[in-house]
Structure formats: C-alpha cells, structure tokens
Picture 1 (cartoon, helix red, strand yellow):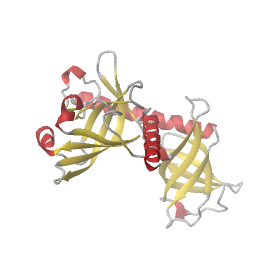
Picture 2 (cartoon, rainbow, N blue to C red):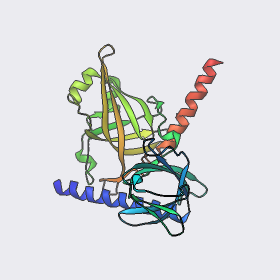
Picture 3 (tube, rainbow, N blue to C red):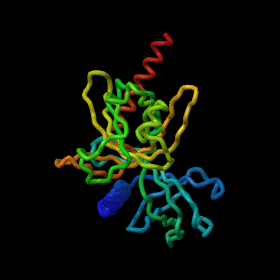
Picture 4 (cartoon, rainbow, N blue to C red):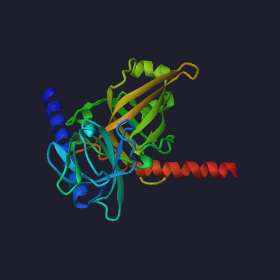
Length: 292
C-alpha cells in the first residue's frame, strides 16, 4: 500500500509539473499580458503589466514594461499574476487565470527594459467569479453522493465500502447543502455522525463520488473527487453537523474498475463549473418569480 501511495504521489507531481509547463508555453506563445499585483507594502503602483519571455524548470522571466528602473527592493516580494488566455482544447473559449510567485531577482537590460525572474508557480487557479460562487442544492440536483476516507490510486471499487451513501443514508440525515466549482458543504444529523464519523479532524482527506444534473430529467454526470475537510460546525439546536470540504484532485474509474486520480486543472473540478453556473442561474430565476 505504501508503494501505491508513493507511486501515486510521484505521478501526481509529474502531472502538475506538466500542467505548469504547458500553461507557461501558452502564455509565452500567445504573448498574454500579465497584470502584476503586489502588496501595498511593496509598491503603490496599481497598473504593473508584464510579458513572459522565457522559462525553465525552476523559474520564469517577465519583461515589465511599466517600470523605468529596477532595484533590489523587489527581491523576495510576493506577487499575484492575473492573465487571460485562449484555451488550447476549446476553440473560441477564453480563460481568466492567476498564479502566485516570489521575485527571485531583478535586472535592468541595456535596452532599458526591466526583467523580473520569478520562482516557478506550483499551480494555476481560475480567476473567474464562478469558481467562488456557492449555490444551495438539493437531492434533485445531486441525486447520489458517497464518500470514503481518502482512496489511493489503484483502489478497486469492489473493495471500498463508503462511510456514508445517500442511497441508504439520505433518510437518516445525510444532505448536500451547497456546492461550488472547488468545494461543497454537507449537513449530517448528529446521530448519523456519531455512528459513521465519530471523530473529525480538519485537514483530513476524503474521496467522493457524486452525480449532478442540470435540472430534473436531464442527463446525469458522475464525478470523482478527493477533498480535504476545512471546517466543522455542530449545531446542537438543529442536531446536525456541517462539514465544509475543498476539492484537491479529480479522478475516474479505469477499465479494470480501479480509481485513477489527477490534479485539478486551474483549481476546479473539470465540468462541474457549468452545473454550478446553471444552478446559480436557476436560483436567481426562482427568486425573481417569488418576488413578482
């Protein structure tokens, strides 16, 4: 089992490195403009833009057009970089993304241009609003949900018995409360919690399988995700516990019925955002009708 975990970690790290390298290639080739956001203690300048000119396995170099000079005071500063890019897989689609890094060195070229060398980012995240939109849902929109303590890649599904399963536990007090593209919250009756999950530790990891539908009667999409427990709140008056989870990776079941995990692309579960967006639209429409 330890060997499986080690191999899975190595594969996960390799996929993440490839995602980073592929994205840097797209940023460079598309000459995407990066907006640099520094802390106020570093600079009062608001509109600092740059272009990626080169990168390697350890760093990336930005040409900063908004600065007339450079000094060592920038070195070590943390920066958030925002940019827009064309999706290489979906023609005509644009993505708004961000990453964080630190300035490793600063150089003023003979041409007068200022270059910032940044440490290589670990990942890229979506900068679009829908990522953080959290929408209330019910069993009509998430008809099934099961979860386990984290299952490593290679786990055979027949060997895995879920801690909780909505098929049997919805009537006993398991309920999905809300969803976003990168997390969810469950509500569990305290009696069921004491039986299935008597101890909860923040940072503990779990594996989920759930189905989502845009609206009743529409096709069902199945998702596999790994998530970490971020917060726990027990409401003694209602007799239930709220569990908040953040998604870490997504997966699928291969032809041998074994789980395979891969890192999230842009910090979102692939394909889940469109459901969250649709559910959010429906919620506003329902409110509008109610107010009329």
